[in-house]
Amino acid sequence: MSAGISTAHSVTEPGPRAKRVARALVILYAIATLVPLVWIFLTSFKSPPDSISYPPKVVFQPTLEGYCNLFTTRTHQTAEYIASLAAPTGRCDEITRSRNMVIAGPSNYLPRFVNSLLIAFGSTALSIMLGTTAAYGFSRFKMPMKDDILFFILSTRMMPPIAVAIPIYLMYRELGLSDTKLGMILLYTSVNVSLAVWLLKGFIDEIPREYEEAAMIDGYTRLQAFFKVVLPQATTGIVATAIFCLIFAWNEYAFAVLLTSGDAQTAPPFIPIIIGEGGQDWPAVAAGTTLFLIPILVFTVLLRRHLLRGITFGAVRK
Amino acid sequence: MRLLPRLSDRLAGATPRQLASRVRGLSDRAIAWAFITPTMLLLLAINIFPLIWTIYLSFTNYRANRPNAVVRNMGLDNYRAILTDPDIWAAMQATAHFVFWTILLQTVIGFTLAWLIDRRFRGYGFWTTVILVPMMLSPAVVGNFWTFLYQPQIGLFNYIVSFFTGVSPSSFEMIGSVNLAPWSIIIVDTWMWTPYVMLICLAGLRSIPDYIYEAAEIDRASAWRQFLTITLPMVLPFIMLAVLFRGIENFKMFDLVNLLTNGGPGSTTELASITLKREAFEKWRTGFSSAFAIIMFVTVFGLANIYVKALNRVRSR
Image (tube, rainbow over all chains, first blue to last red; front, side, top):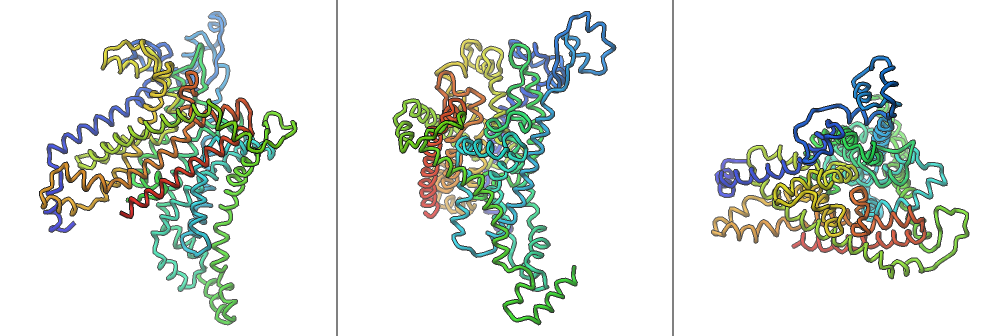
């Protein structure tokens, strides 16, 4: 900003006192909003009795029991049988035996987590490939009813997921795509591609056409100009869009719970059904939740600058 | 790589005009279609075809758990049954209550937060990011862990409420009681989505150029007057956009509420999407639920269209 404006700026700049009050209130809200998340994180390190104590315990002896229970299934055994076993092989073994149980095998959490990863990355890759090319097409070429087609693409996202799930359920049953990763990847791609087209069209619109035109005068074909000039310029936009697609696929629940039950089940429908003895095993649920949410925290920080654009389908740009 | 285009150039120069573009690569038209067709095909296969199928099913008595039963044409019977079904109307009422209160709370809190953040105090960027975290999380996982926070007696929520108000933490149940359950889902949704409204409002506040305030300052307009005549009208289109997006999302709300209350107790928190799930995947009334799905879709679509028109009118003012 030039010097002339900055002197005038002081008129609208809030005073130091207003700033301090605003700061205090915002920090108060931020801390309050974090309490539930911190609580879940703490619960994941509690023992099952500590997790359901009254009053709720803030100070407690941390244990990895929740994480052990998350990854294993266990069976009850008599004290004599446990005493007859060889020395425990690890921390989890020890904890399990102290509860008169032995580890029976791995739980389903890890496969569900891997499913989440495969489906999220698979559908994101596909959405970005389809979205980038389609967005370029819409951005650069004249075509009949362009606005209508774009609105149609957006409107596919307005359908309630349960409404879409009814015929998809029937269709997948006919095609043998029920409970398959391919089925889920295609479904998530079809949801994400509308976001990808809208966001990427915005990003590509911002790249001056002159760049490609200059390249084409230099002898590039349109395709070469797309790959060598436009794509490198659009990298930031593509990465931001990809993260949005990843987050959607990672978080999605409605389709996952209705259309998958085993082989292709992702983590969101699985975490709520982690059951311990006599009800939910809260430390294990909290551990599963914590591990599941950490990637999202990383993404949020990475996306900070593009968040606004992503959540409004590109309607608001900074 | 450099050689290829040169060669094609020379070829192009030697060929008649119409052929030239083809030799230099695909024509723009061909590329445009090649780039757009795959996306359109996918959407046709996984969005439009199912939609048409749903429309067809909505006129039948088909049941997905009895694929071999004879399918009968019901005409408009399903639609008539839905519009006269008191349970459906109860669900619509619960949805309206949920949408109204979540949007009101989120707009008020979100705008206030954005206004405070726009004071640009030290470290505002960091705290903004912290506030944004809840809206990025999986609604299903959020709904699930809030059931833990809402547990009577052992849950943190009841404990905090009792800490501030003095009522016993075991004297009330957020998701177990008929009166509080609708508010339990409103609280969680507001916790989760207020940052969304805040972020959009913040963009609105930042879009107001400083010189407008400076002019008002010269006219000696009071701070309150400036807020009413400059800030609010200029942020209004942004607030309306946020309300539009939240309205659509919360009208079809499923995941959060399904895990938090699953429509209970009784059917006090049974939102439209939960009723739809019950009809379609628990009672297996596929034809009936297809008709309900179409009605929901038309409602969202219609409301969104009316709203977008209003939004454009505000914008062009």
